Length: 581
Image 1 (tube, rainbow, N blue to C red):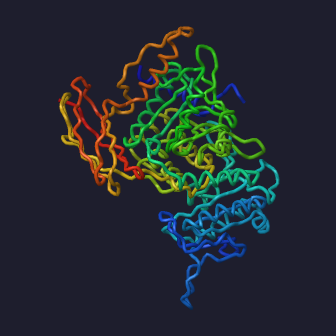
Image 2: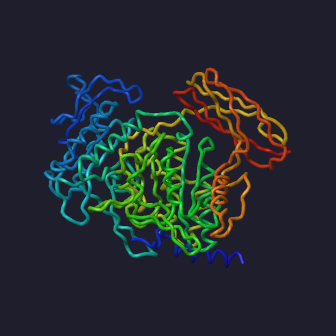
Image 3: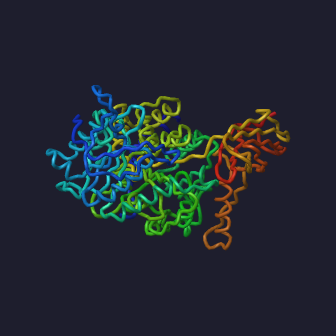
């Protein structure tokens, strides 16, 4: 019976390997470009130079061995811009120069003057910068401009690369890709951080710059800085396969450090995380607008739409794309990841979902999404690795996070990765699994500035004594938030993410006046993992409190979570607590 079930899963996985499914809606080192240097540190914001991006070329050399004279530092931020957007792209360069970067601005007319394939001409320029770089600093590349699909490249576009995905289970597929600019030695592994602003007019570039500056310079303390809001569509491939994928996702979510909060809004009628179907899209928009570190979508997709929520044979919008232009995010502009097919497609005159999100004046500050058909197996790996990088490794910039996540897709070896490989290995050969991982490095594209500084809360040290307690007992919590002053510490005892401590009520049938209230109550209960909460005075960045564990609390794993703030800075931390006799 077990073997038969596995065969059933394997055959079903062949159907759902593509995450999209059907929806109901449609080496030179010279001539490297313009540079400017500054000795500013990003953390201080003070600068010894306020020079704008100049119009003369400066070689990225650091010293002259014969004279001992020190030249400009190596370039660490390269802008490749469509000519008509070059002036406003230069404002991005000024912003980064003021923050301590050495910037080079290269116009597409300069690239075209090099002759040959413009994609390879751009890569050759980038190889020069990469060879001359400071190895202790990341190298960022910002592409400013849209691309034309399949047509000639002119000075008003920045071309896409193209790679071919070859699988045993599918015909070859051409993948439009910016990843070729990040992979300089053709081994598929990311060498530098690349992002794009797929704009056609200067106003769109200015809007992206303003969002970037606002994200980095206007910060407020609050739960939004540790919040990750997720929403998902139903797979719709049967209980067996759906449960397998949900189990993998739940395992991945449990790996996220518990100092972060995660919400879920799930377009599956039978899920406790579903919302009122007629208001589902509004709830997703509300979640985006409340501000968060990340917003992540997992499910089916197309370039211009999300799949619908099916409810008793009726279809309701999962997220109405018309609402994206009216986003009004408060607290913190999130980084959005769309783990679905083709939502990052952008070549041509029509904006995709990903491009529309970036273009929204009050929308997200950066978007990670796929340019083409994507598959469940590498999608599962990518979102797991990106989630761990963003929350456990916490690199300073979104570009570094993107690079690190892509590297881990190819290099990470651990028990959970083996579990994912074993599950999908029932229907995929080792060669196809390797090919899918490599091809998806090319599929996923960053819309936004790769040097965007993420800005995490500081870490707080949290200790509990004892580390295991019986129901009805108590634990002492000790909190240290170095660098914070006097303020308040918010402490909660919470279940693991796969548990729902609150009570769920059977949903009444459609037409029952209590249906919506029950759905809302179940949704809130499913997303509320708090068993108990309290506050304590923060004095000089330290706090202590005693927690009384409820006598009727079920035995198992729990977490003590802390968010401390002094009004201008904050710190987060968590520690596991075992409740048992």
